[in-house]
Each structure stands twice: as C-alpha cells, then as structure tokens.
Length: 153
Length: 425
Figure 1 (cartoon, each protein chain N blue to C red):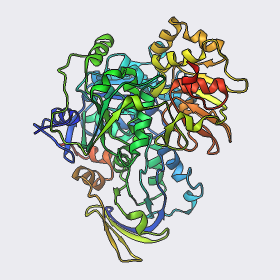
Figure 2 (figure 1 turned 120 degrees about the vertical axis):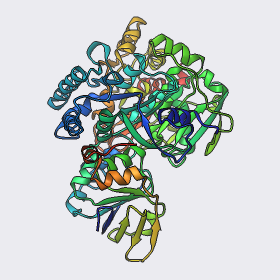
Figure 3 (figure 1 turned 90 degrees about the vertical axis):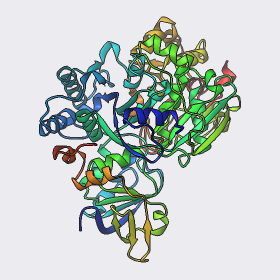
Figure 4 (figure 1 turned 180 degrees about the horizontal axis):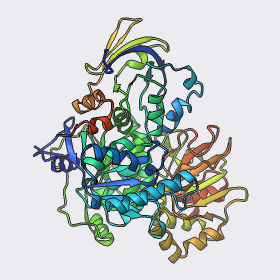
C-alpha cells in the first residue's frame, strides 16, 4: 500500500476548527487526543477545517502525531496546501461527516479521490487532488520534492 | 475569452493567454512577503533560512530567485522572547545575504501595513506572503494570498508557485456608507450574509459604483478579512483613489485592469452600502456578524484598537472622535496600538495620541500586539478592532472576543459595555 492509499481507524471532529485550535494535536478541541491517537489513524473533520492562520506548527503537530491522512468536508486553501507540502495527504469529500462514526475504519485512496467506509461498505467520492499535489505527496512533501529535482513546469 | 480581474493577473503571470476557474497553473510571483516569525524556530527547528539553504544547496544554487522582490518585516518590536530575538537576527542575516528589503525598528510596524505604505503593491501584481493576511494587498488591485512556511521556502527557491484558479464571487456595490460605517462593517456584513460556505477557497471581488465611496484604508480592511471568510483572495479593481494612493506611496507604474463584461462569477451579490449599520462579530467566528444594536449592553473588560485589520490612521481618527473629552470607564482597559510607525507618527502629529492618553488609554509601540498574545483572563470580554475571535484567541478558552470597527471599540470602552458609536458623535 503506498502512502497515497491508507487504511485505518478514524477520529471524527466537527466544523469550523481553526488553525489555533489544531495546534499541539487538536489540543484546543480535545486536550487528550494526542494521547489517544495512534500512528496510521485517520482524521475526519467537518466543514472549514484549518481556517485562519498560516502557522505551520498546527499541521506539523498532526503529522508528528503519526496521523496518516486527513479527510474533511472542506479545508481552507492555506491549510490544505500546507498539509500536502509537509507530506500529509488531505482531501475534501462532501458527505464524509455524516457517513462515518467515530472509531470506524476507512480506506482512503488519495489518488482516486475515494473513501470506503468498512462498516457500511459505502464508498464516497471526494475531490481528486491536482497532479502537482500528488507528485509532491509521492515525494513526501515539497522540500523532498524540490531537493530531488522536482520543479514546477 | 472574458476573464475576471484575478484571472487576468494569474494568466499574465502564468504565461497563458487565458485561464478560468479550476485550471491548475504555475505562476511566477512578482513579490514575496515574509514576517520575522517565520525565521524563528517556532515552525521548524532549523528555521526558515536553515531549511532554505539546504534546499538551495540541493538545487546547486546559493541564492534565492530574486532578493529585490522579497520584503522581510520585523513584526514584533521589540522581541519579547529569546526565540523571537533569534528569529529577527536570522531575518536580518537573510535580508543582508540575499539582498532582500528589510523593515523594522523606526520604519516598521505590522508587515502588511509596512508593505503597503512603502509602495510595494502595484495594481496587477501577483503577490504571495508567508502570513495569512497577505490577502490585504488586493485592496490596490493586486492578486495576493497567504502561504505557509514550507511553501514560502519553495517560492524563495524557485520564484514559482502552482495554484488552482479560484471560482469568483462578485459584490456589486451601490450607495454610500452611513455614519460610523467603514470597511470593517462592510466586510463583517458580507461575512454575516454569505458565511464561510459562500466564500471558502474563492476569489472575492468588490466592485461597482459604491466602491468610489470606500476609502483605500477601508478597502485594505475588506481585503484583509478575506481570509476570515476562508477566501483565497479579495480584490478591488484599481480606480482614481488607487492611482492617487499608489502615487503617494511610490508604487510602480501600471496599466489599469478590470474584469471583462461577461466574465464568469459563481454569484453576483448586489450590496447597497447605505443599508449597512456598524457591525459586531460575536464569538467565536468572524462570520457571526450582526448590527451593533444586537449586542448593546454586553459587559466589556478590555478594548483593543490595532492590528493589520484596523490600526491605520482612519481607524485612529475614528477612535479619537469618540474619545476626545471622554474617559475610558474605570475598571476597563483600552489598549491602542497604531499598526505602523507611519500611522503612529501621523497620529502624533495630529494630536490623537494625546487624546488617547487623556482618555486613559494605553498607547503602545507599533506591532501585532494583543492580537497574537494572551491578554484576557477566564470570563473576560474584549471588543477588538482585529480580525479573529476564535475560541481562546486572546486568552483562555473561557474568555471571549467581539470584533468591530475602531469607533465601536472606543465607544464600548467609554461605556464599559458594547455601545453604538453613532450615539457618541
């Protein structure tokens, strides 16, 4: 399984969580989350995930906690780009919040833009990532992408 | 093919004859803004310059794409932590070694204000910046958007950025703003009307005959808060006001651009500016905006006038109009932080700082100040002229922030509760 196809337990969060409250592994929303989350787990969020500041502290804390990927109803442009640039796959998928319960297992294919909920067997179709985002993720982030001869053409 | 103003700017910088919403393009940045915080070790143990030097080396390069197009600003003056002090030292190293433009000390203040006031925005430019409020520059007819730490390193190394052309929303303005109504009220009203769902990852275009009645400073506020609606950028087509301002601050020459007739918008909203009242955004979201009357009487512990949103001379004049001959209510704190040293000096020359001090306000040096530092205790309420009122933004999560224009902050500090500034003038 490549890093762009992941399977894992989900943690479900609500709408309108801003960058400041994501800082230190979602500690503004759930201070205990960082002790509960396990490497490879998948974060599901509602609408407007990561709005506000461009501070990279917050998205990096999710990566450092081992979160394997993010799927949200919608993600702020700055936050979404930053997740991809630090090598943490993230995509928007309308309907995801209602389709999963906390603790469900899902399989996310970031290349195809699909999410399969194992409990219900239902597959949701999200927004496919632009090619640049896929290439950057495949290298593990923008820095490794540029260091390995990647360029924007 | 007809294009919006934003699409025209993107197509020019992406070397394409035309672009439309959804296209993925590679743009060549005209300018890059970076704040000192990015040079500290807050986001990465190596700091921005350390990470950049590694990337440059791997690409066989020593220097950034074009130092003359990069503006670095020392936002926090003076630095109050060792990390910030060290970050500023790296920022100075970077500016010297890479020949970037550096502001700080006596010509400084908040970066976005400094960037605009020193003529770094020319209409039609494509500008990215390592801070979310970079979108402010759209007020002068430029495309401008904020980027993260890693992406800033990418632009420094290559001068390029890939992006998806955003869908556009147009606001067709008519009428004229009423008493005590400025850009802050217009943008909060817009946020309250369309919410995040209506703006997320879009371009917001503020146009129409009503924009003639909106000052450059108010336009800066309106575009500054685009990110508070989660938009990619906001833009006001350049007009006579823009031309006069750009001339005054020494910006570059430009050929005026406007959106084409027939350009594609997802929505066009008609807005009559005369119908907008002073607005207050209640906790915990900037889009939670309503007329000030709905919150009259809410007890206030602190007022804050400042920030890249509303710490300009227009805001300081509005506040002085309310505070002249009045006193801040005992037990209430009013902190006034002119957003740049230019605004500070203008306020000083006009005697406004004395008005503030006589009223019992605490006037501080120019910087981001309380907007980014805790100043409230649990249960306290602040009315702020800033841009964010998320949970815990100015203190513990049990404290709360209401957003308004500077006159409403001043009136509320005098009354000790949220007050309608129109009753004070």
